Length: 386
Image (cartoon, rainbow, N blue to C red):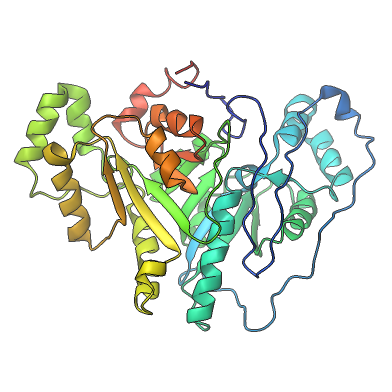
């Protein structure tokens, strides 16, 4: 398998591929964006003449478009390092320090960042919002996207220029100047936090906030422009790691026995259960308008569990929670990458780096949920080839 970089936003093979961009939520489309040239230390003289922001258009915010109250919305907080490609700037910071980093950002503030791994996901959220506003013009039950960054406020100008350049509909910013954003995430009633910082993701999970570390795959599979597709692992993602602990401690046979003996006992919830619940709530708004077969949100369970021997408990748990999964794939230990390549999700959540790497190898944008017993086995695997 491909080697995983220790920096989540680094491309796994070191190559940047072209990223296909979906139409924006206000009806305009853009072509594909060429990714940035590779970082070159010779370019750190900081004397490059800034390039003007191109493709900037007036934002269509009139005509009844409003911003929902955080407590009514499905709030997705996205780090600037996963929404955009900032490897070059990160290396300036690491090699020359914060003052040179800030000067570099100011000198280049009219140059937009290229799209990062979360970009197609955010565009899909905006596409769903467009459909929701058509059906429910006054409803505040929408996706609300918050851009979260450790950056100083000076860098905000470049981020705003980039958002306008890509015609994204993001108005809420949280620029912490190096402080932890976790307290702000709670104030925003955040339903999901996506970041390149694994430590902050773990901090968010410890506070009960659904969170994951995003990775850029070696290649990018083109994804739907009209339907948001979200895929979840089961154990330690939607469910607790109870069953995973049995497997790690006692092996597969004992795991099967445990699941058979407890098939009528519900699994406890995992860290991403609440986000699936939020997606389901929005799906039902489309169902209520007779659009079940044309719903712009589709969810998937992609699990290594076997259907007959251990799948029934998972399905009974979801049913008892009142949650629907559009498609459930029980792979019985088979690789997940090829299945995800067919699904083409905007994002896939898994608690094991082995599966995150396998998904990324096949072109899927995958996010690691550092939760549960499997994390004891992760550190020794992330720095070696699979």
